[in-house]
Image (cartoon, helix red, strand yellow):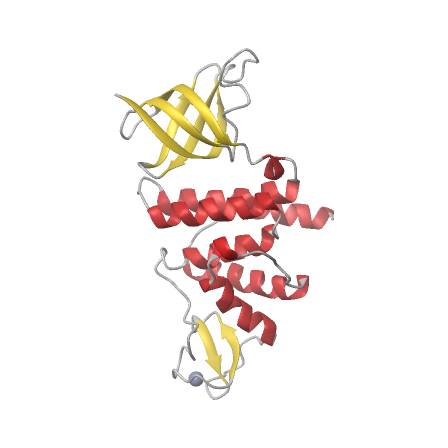
Length: 244
Ligand SMILES: [Zn+2]
């Protein structure tokens, strides 16, 4: 069956001397594997068109649950800015890897939309770490471990919120506080903004590095505690940070 699908290449690997297998995140089928025969040859019509993060329309021989075969491809967006910047590549890899762990063979329109907007924002030059934090926070609902950020996660009080706690899974107030790590007021507020903001409407991103780091550290600890997800791209990031 010949089929037309649109999607993002979330990873690519070599297959034989000349071919590639790409994994494409589609709205129609979730994540599918596609064999791009000859894609590594310079003269191939696929050459340079089937690389990671490219958004394209693919004509494929679709095989459910198996490797599909690429017939032709029309690139809709190369995401050139991402591809030319190591930091953007790294964070885009983290969100792509997260998608591949969460979606697998499932179709999920909401995750598709969030991923697509986040990739665009990173390409447009918004803070890759900030957008990645937003993406990770947004994914918590799909992992069944969303944070409670409307009131104290223990007593429900709306007053005197003093930190966000990993063990309680959300905000905690002064009365319920029991030696949890305190984060800054700015980080407490922003974590909620990040969780609920309409990503498409972000037009500026003025967040200090210190506050971003507080938020990222919290999210990483939360992921480690509750999701069981391990991301290879994140370990690459720590190598990159050590080199800087
Ligand atoms: Zn409380």
